[in-house]
Image (cartoon, rainbow over all chains, first blue to last red; front, side, top):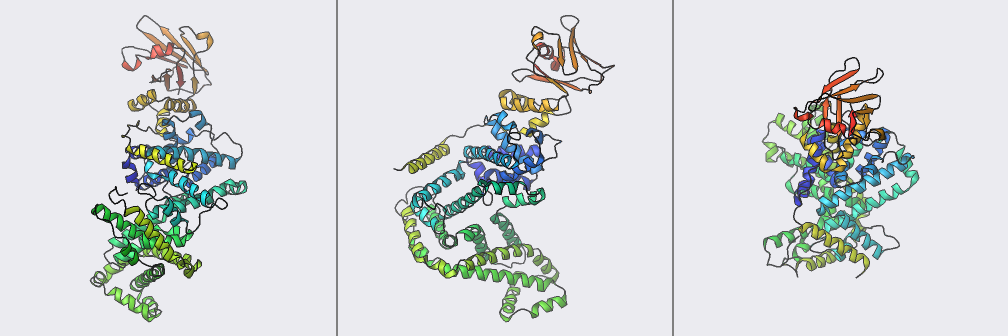
Length: 435
Length: 173
């Protein structure tokens, strides 16, 4: 994603990131996290890393921003120094007033106010840079369009709700802007999160509470967690499972896990809209793919839409997958535990689980391995499986909390609207370029 | 068309314009930390890339001067009113800086260091346009540093002229 963004315009983003990476001697992981923060590709509010940085800056008690960048300064960690350096450097190159920057830490006397002012200023600078070098992010335009839609349709209660994504996409989606339903849904989730955060920051009491929290409560680790999206970490776990010599999950099961991870935030916030993304968005992908391959042929929409997974089936699929992952964990325990513990573990399995695990053990990739190799191959997958189990059971709990039956009430209507929108987007204008 | 819709269209048109615009050659980014590190370096070596960038970017010059001022033992932004003419003397904090000319070609820089003042190792001169030089001063003998400003050395060529310019900033490090 970052590479796409970097190469899309002039490579300037990539060059700028490299300059700062070299100046601070960042590792590959640190550079990747810096790139995510700079692009705003972080979980929830894209300004959250800036808030954490502002808080740390104020906590140092320094009055000179530039002194924090001196080689012998230990007040900030390496990653924070690099992030601060990036924001300041690009702002200064773009003719930001030097005096305004150097006075940032001495302006307000109140700690919470200083954090707020710093966050606002640094966010503004960073976003100005994003608009300049990453026009493809379109975050600004998406938020503007969402705000406009909500204020027009529900001026009295402009909070995004479950089901808004489809309506918004139906009204605003075009071949050249907000084309994909999943983009619209992700935009709404980010918008809802940003509104929530903005509301918290607007409350002086809340700011004071956060500003006065002990330093160790907002540690580097916490800031890093913010920058690592669920999808990114799940991708790594899925890669581990895919490359393991003993295949515990099938390719289709891994793909479903990837889809659920992509939509996890949306599931937690807008489950009905997220279920539509899980079941029908693949149809849009297929339509786009078909148009790219056969530009002159009008794509078939109705048949693949009718054949797509129903909401109830998708929910069952998630539950079943959670169970499969649990089976895998049981299998690992039984194979890797000592003989007596292993027997105890096996004795606690019910008959159906026993059968499922035995079927798994008969798979060629597992059956052909020597016991010692199998042990090692399974153990290295346990962390990835635990993460997937947490993800899938979490998704299941979210769906349970929203009454599964209620989520399917509007399914037919949603599918009909989705199909009509797809037809409007692709059937009549199949000759145009595909986004 | 509603106002919001017009705004949206305008934003989108701007986006399209950006996408279709030919790639612009942006100035390479010189990290602020690099500039600060360059200002507080412990050698008199110059980095041509940074020097060149500072000459074309006033903001980078400001950062550099800011860092240099914080790091220096003493600094003088310009000669005082009494020294408006071609001065041979600059007082920089507790230090006294003189230029003694023996003949047309040769001059000596003499820096007198009071007993209570900390030792200095380098002197950096910066003209208004960002040109300048850092020179190693050597060890003081009995509170005096004496340095030949030999125009035969390329790095010394601009030093006498800069020293005599009242607008030259002088930093003692």
